[in-house]
Image 1 (tube, rainbow, N blue to C red):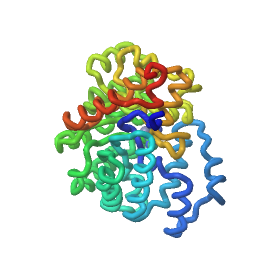
Image 2 (cartoon, rainbow, N blue to C red; image 1 turned 60 degrees about the horizontal axis):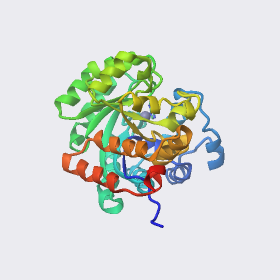
Image 3 (cartoon, rainbow, N blue to C red; image 1 turned 60 degrees about the vertical axis):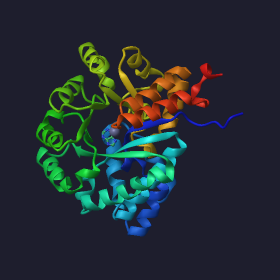
Image 4 (tube, rainbow, N blue to C red; image 1 turned 135 degrees about the horizontal axis):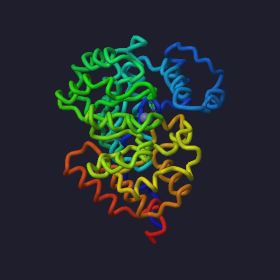
Length: 339
Ligand code: ADE
Ligand code: ZN
């Protein structure tokens, strides 16, 4: 029997702060003298029951209090990359939320310095190539996003793209037109969360106003036929996060997830983990969960893996190398059609 290895894949929707496992949170809290309002890791885990996106975000931002130094961010990213390797990740495009740290007195330089230290070591240590995506918090002002972009200017050579996250409803993409124009002028790629809890109109705005290269989530596009046609025609990638959708009650049950319908419609869908420490699984766990709940065959899983590399911000030679790895892969994800 050959060793069972997960399909090679790219992870394109991953908030590094959402990889903070309770073990590391308690370790950093002790090291930095931060008091957590939970007596134990078990008590913290028990709080991981969310009614919606906001109830998750409240805990997600609160727990970030333990992240203070460059070393903390480097350790956080290294722990994610070690897990990602086990999950078959060959390339990771990693979000971070600078405003969630600068608001606590931690500078953009500290965050980027720590993250890039781990990312720079990842190719040799784990065989994983990486990119960083700087997200603006959409429930903060457009002025705050602009100030964040200016504070990050010295580090733009380390940042591949800008993104937009946090509480979606009531904060349409058009609010951030100016900062996205600056980012494009600076040569960065652009992505935005849209159509997670928010309406299809937010996906239209992300495309037409922010001129994004990818949509993060986007599952609610399925409510608008014209929007689906547009996304298909332009082959705009969607970074879908199935376990997140269930945990945040965007979708009631994984068996009802629109992923198969999205693939059938011709959308360029990828599968990702979003905030894996909170949502019950890393990216390969998401692949196996949708395989089991939606009865996906091996060829569909390979399509999802191929899509992840097609949608990645990679040079063409590296993209081709990774696509060949998917074609050559034989393992558990290959499913029934591989035997
Ligand atoms: N920040 C971290 N995870 C998020 C999500 N799923 N949606 C919006 N903002 C986020
Ligand atoms: Zn997200």
